[in-house]
Length: 197
Image (cartoon, rainbow, N blue to C red):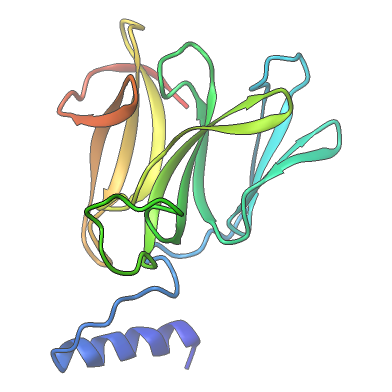
């Protein structure tokens, strides 16, 4: 019996017995298997960087030197390089699974341990050879399965088009998010997009 099958059977057994078991060992969407690679010049210095996602870690290389690697305790499941914040510059957009929602600074209303395995959306800029966070979400539910950034047909703004999964075995749904100064918000707009990254 495989380890994954054994865990699934244990969860089903405990659920049937009426016990709650939080799943914190692995994210529910499976593991990325094939390496994915793209090139982009996020810092605008004329030298493109290579962004490679393999084994759920993202590595950024410029001129054969690693300039950034996602932390070992993150599991990166998707990334898109495009302008998600509508500031006219492309950014690195990551879907990350990690333990804890808030990091070292919990909001005053939060009580108890912050160690659940949760999904997050992070946006980074590359400037002066360093990755700098633009926006880092708390836990997102339902979690993101896939994302793309699409330009409206009129070219007014970009939308973040997100495929969400409510849970294992449940159907996915597509939502549209827009940047508004400091945060993304969901909109019911499902316009005509001219291109997507």
